[in-house]
Amino acid sequence: MERTFILLKPDCTERGLIGRIISRFEEKGLRLVAMKMLRVTPEVAKKHYAEHLEKTFYPGLEAFITASPVVACVLEGPEVVRVVREMVGATSGLKAAAGTIRGDYSSSRQMNLVHASDSVESSGREIAIYFTPSDMHDWDPALACWLQAPSEA
Ligand code: CMP
Image 1 (cartoon, rainbow, N blue to C red):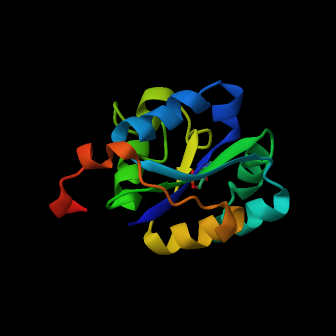
Image 2: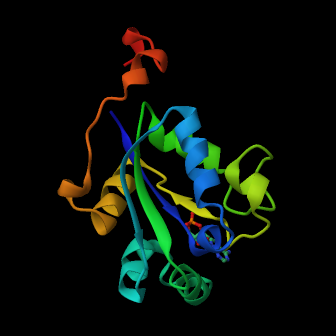
């Protein structure tokens, strides 16, 4: 089963939206297999956002992502990387479609509430920055038989 990484950012914590946003993924039927509250350090920010280090917005992004605690999670499900990206919506809350998390709760390009991996390769890299293998919990929800037909599993 595919896994993806999400990070509920400092604006999510400060605005009291952690529960509401986690609920959307749970209600979709995705499985939480790891979850941790932490403070991102400048070193972790540089690893996580390595591809943006040279961008003009990076200093502001680092100041933002280290400003308050965040919640890191790993979600599991069929095609979960694509499904979660679609649920999260376009980078800017001003452009994200209504019905997506950013479209419903964000009006900012930087303060867009939640990060989600953009590919299976990125999810593996990002999960390894925030979690160790012993943080992962394999489990089978009793309701799994009502979420997908056996032929889809
Ligand atoms: P995320 O999906 O976590 O990936 C990189 C983050 O950088 C992005 O969400 C935004 O928080 C931030 N970001 C992307 N583009 C810009 C921009 N042009 N200006 C400021 N922040 C940005």
